[in-house]
Amino acid sequence: MASYNFAAGPSALPKAVLAAAREGLGDWDGNGQSVMEIPFTGEAFARIHSEAEATLRRLLAIPSDYQVLFIQGGAYGQFSLLPMNLLRGRESVDYAVTGHWSQRAANEAKRYCRVNIVADGATNGFTDIPEWPEWSLDPAAAYCHITSNETANGIQFREWPETGSVPLVADVTSDFLMAPLDIRRFGLVYASAQKNAGIAGLTLVIVHQSLLGRALPITPTVFNYELLAAANSRINTPPVWALYLAGLVFKWILAEGGLAEMAARNRRHARWLYQAIDESGFYHCRVAESARSSVNVCFELPTAPLQQQFLAEAEAQGLHNLKGHAAATGLRASLYNGVSEAAVSGLLAFMHDFARCHAPAA
Ligand code: PMP
Image (cartoon, rainbow, N blue to C red; front, side, top):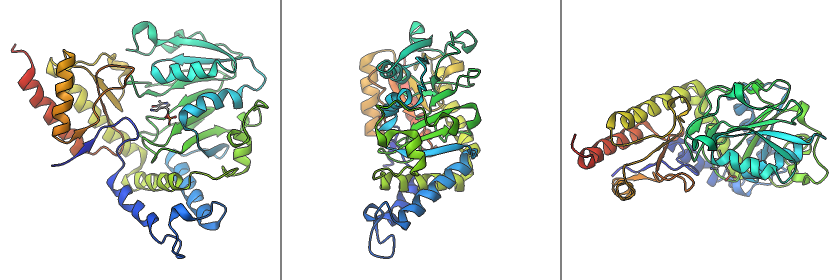
C-alpha cells in the first residue's frame, strides 16, 4: 500500500532528496568520513555551504546587497531575535496578527519593546486577512512583521502590504521556496527549514545589509545578524547535516524547473483540493477564498466523531498526518513541495469515497 505524508512540519521530503542524502552518510570526502563527521572549519564543509547558498541565491534571485544567514534556533527563535537585532534605537515594532504563528511572534516581541498590532485577524476568528490599506501602520516602527502563510490556520497573503520606509519583515517558514519571491520587497525574510528547505535544526534568514549592525547589547553573539554575516554563519558549529540537506533540496528544486514550476504544481494541487471541499457539500473550509492557503489546506467535517473516523480511515489507507493544528480544530492537508501528485490524488479519492459513505442523503 502506498503511504503519503501530509504533515505540517517536519514534513514530506522529495524522495530524490532522501536518496541523494544517502551519499552523505557514506564516505563523503574520500577519507572515510560522512558529512556528519567533517569539521565545520574545513574545506569540505565550506564547499557544502557555499554551494547551498549559491543555489538558493540562484533560485530566489537574491540581490547581492542581501546576506543569507544559516542559523539555529528555529523560526520561533527569530521571534525574539528580530527585535533584538533590528530595534536600532527605536521603541516599537508593527505586527499584523493573522493567525497562530504571527500571534506568537508578536507576543515574543513584547518582551523587548512596544508592539503595535496593525491588524488583528482574531476579530474575524482568523478566517481572513484584514485589508492592508486599513492597517494602522506606525511610520516610526523599527519594522513591520507579517507571516506570509499561517500554517495552523490555513491563511496566506496574496500580495504584500506597502509599508513605506518601514522595512517589511516576513516569517515565510511555511511557503518558502514554493513560488518566486521578490526579496526586494522585504528588509528581511526568515524560515525554518523543516517544511520546504530540508530538516529541522536550520533557520534561514535573508536580510538586507542596511539592517545589520543595530543589535541590542544583550543579543547573544551566535544570534547577532551582523556578526553572523561577518563570520559566514560560522561563529559556532553550524547544523552541518541540515545545511547539507538544504543544499540537496535547493538543487532538486532547480532540477525540477525552479520556483515557477513549484508554484504551478502547488496551485494545481490546492485548486483540486479546495474544489473537492467546496463541491462536496460535506467538507467545509472556514477561510475566505481570497485568503486561503495553497500550502496548508484546513477543513472541517460536520461533527467531531466524523473527523475522528476520517482520520482513522485515512491512516488505515496510508494517508498520514491529516489532523489539524491544536490551535485550530479540524483537519489539515499540507501540500509542500515534497508532496507528490500521487499523494494528492490519493487524498482526493479517499475524500470522495468518505463523503459518499457519510454525507447525509440530499
Ligand atoms: N512560523 C511558522 C509560520 C511556522 O509554521 C512554525 C512551525 N510550524 C514556526 C514559525 C516555528 O518554527 P520552529 O518550530 O522551527 O521554531
